Every structure is written in C-alpha cells, then in structure tokens.
Length: 307
Image (cartoon, rainbow, N blue to C red; front, top):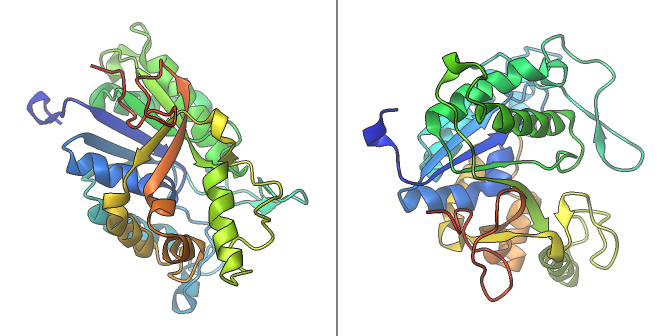
C-alpha cells in the first residue's frame, strides 16, 4: 500500500475467525468502504474447528479431512467481496495460527477445549503474535481499531486471545524504539470493543417471542439476564447506522455458509424485527477520547472527534 492509495480515515478490525467480522461489524465495514474510508481486516485463524452446518460439507471437519480452514478462507473472501473490503489478511499469514476450538461451560459461556492443537491461537506467544499485528498497524496506520472485549464476547479462547494481541500490539506499535524494523511507530487514536445494545436485544427478542418464535436465541428471556456480549446502554459509546448497507451485510453472512444458515438467528432478527436490528452496530470505547455525540448520547461515527 503506497501513500497515494491510503484514505484519510482508516479502520482496522481484528477478529478471531472468518464470519466474526460480518456478524459484528458487517454493516459498518460496508458503510465505510462506500464512503471511501480505508477498511482493513485481520483474521487470526481460519476457523478450522468450526461446526459445519452444511451436511454435504461435513467431510471438511477437523476430525475428518481437516480442510475446513481452506474452505472458510474462500468464504471469507466472498464475504469481503460482498462488503467491498479489499484489504483482508490472516495474522502472520494464512495457517500461522489454528482455531483453538472451544467447549461450553456449565454457566453458558465458552471455554478452551480439553484437547488443543499445538499451533492453536490460544497457545500463541503473545509478543510474537502482537508483533505480527504491529507490522500491520504501522503499515496501515489506522486511526481506529475494533476488536473484542476482555471476555471475547462470549468467552471463546480465540476471541480472548485476539483481544489480548490487539491490545498489546496497539501499545507496542506506538513505541518508537520497539522493533523499528516493523515500520515507523504509530499510535492508534481510538480503540473500540464491539458490543450489542441491551435495549435493542430485549426489543428484538420480545418481537420474536410475540411473533411465536421460541427457538431463535433459545433460552433468552427478553426480561431476563442477557449474555456477556450484550452491553447495557449506558456502557455503549458509539452506534454506527449502517442500515443502508444491510443487504451487503446479509450477503456477507450468507457467504459464510458452513457457519451461518439463512434460517438462523441473524436472518430471523432481520426478517422479524427489521433491518435496523442488524444494521445499527454498537461499540464501547476502550482507548481515546469520545467525539461529539448524537441525540441519544452516542457517537454516530467511530472517527468522531478525529481530524
């Protein structure tokens, strides 16, 4: 990437597996690409341990042909084409880190699996992995970085590790004396953690239940406790309205066909609640100073307040 090709505003997203980006920030990514802003995606693993939802592709599974990663690499490329994102990379290069897998804890969140592959991302040396990202940060020079919170949204070890790597890399990238061979120091002005709005989630669940849908997000009560990745509204910092780009987000989700079905929860939300449920994406600020806010007290742009 040459200086002449670098947009004035640049967003870097750090995700654990293919499909995480489309679920969490697909509308934001499509919106920013359409507006001429730079969007770079770094995916930390190829999602080799993912559950396969397409029966005719079950042979790709880790305990069979073990070729799901290559297949999901293609799914990711198709999803990025749907969103218009041309700069997407794997941390350290494709195959450097493998999906760690997961299992469900009795409390309902994800934890590390009992058996983990030797080069699983969960086992990655933190400095080594962070330096791979430092080189990307110093090349792309993003003003804004988006990743997960410290719990990885729902506890998946690769999401937690992505949070750690991104956080460490942001700090290291700003230090002029740290690995000058990786490029000139760059300080990322704002870091956000992706989130979901509790009020929006409750409203969406309520609409689904009133419509007779008891299976989408099964077990979640609109008036009961919500998963960790859902943040109470007072914790939110920014809401990006990408409803004009909901078709692109839905196309990106559909591209991840081994992981997401068109009758799954995300499409059910869109069909039953409306595009706004999937087109407005929320964030918590983790580094930097919030910019001007809208009527609801939230920034409407991740770049708000930046020149």
